[in-house]
Image 1 (cartoon, rainbow, N blue to C red):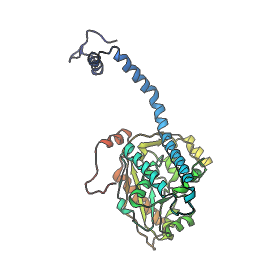
Image 2: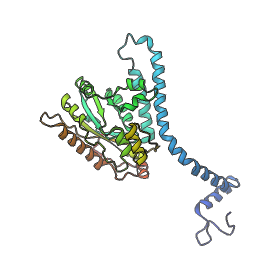
Image 3: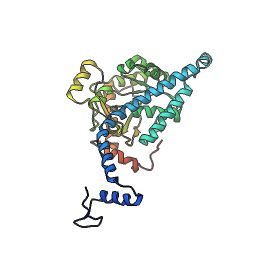
Image 4: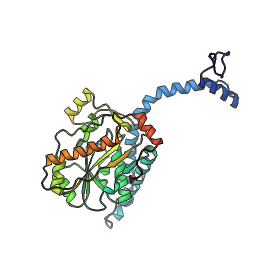
Length: 334
């Protein structure tokens, strides 16, 4: 209860500013017991906030399934046209890309810096840092399709192909399991291909310090050498603040190493500012070894992280970036 001798003025007997505001609103609107309603709303917020943080990541998964449902409907609607058209899925891809691009703009104010480094035609290998949930790559694929008219193939972890209902989505958006020979073939055919050398292990075991978790992986470098294509490093600012994982704890590390499946829960879905940065292409060099190229690519990716990411990452800071722009004027943004 509020002491009736207190006032909204300044002094020892003044009441808290929020209480004072509530009394002013009660007098203004002619509503009684507004403070009780306010306290009840605060209680509900305290109770349901943890639940909301757990639900938001799975809302994104729901959006993926909504995409799959749309693709199934589209497939049935155009079944008779399939025999006469080699571009059956172009309309579906464009619709889905527009959907995800809209989600990116509204929820994350998503931007891509350096899109001009993606060739208008011809192959390139894109190497990216893997967040706890790679929503930035979905957004990036949508941007490429909308602005370049190109699809970007991607190497996905084996467990993704075992998720019920995902097979159509993976087929339409050209995800592959990633044998080295298949990757080389795709690049030699003139396509874009994306690989995250850290993969699921990086998603689970990296954290707000944005450490690159590649181990000794260099297969991607051998793919670039064999296909004679440039490598383009890619990093998304604040991706670890949008979604976080408990995969770094001892239990979930053990579960992943034992079963090779990401059992670790995620939380987040925060509407933080996301900016994807594309580094300068690393050109094909016939004299370089796979080990040297892998190290060179890792250094280029680390340089993007050092330049564009606050370490350690901070969720509140990433949220506040939605309200101000720190970019240089000469950077090209999409």
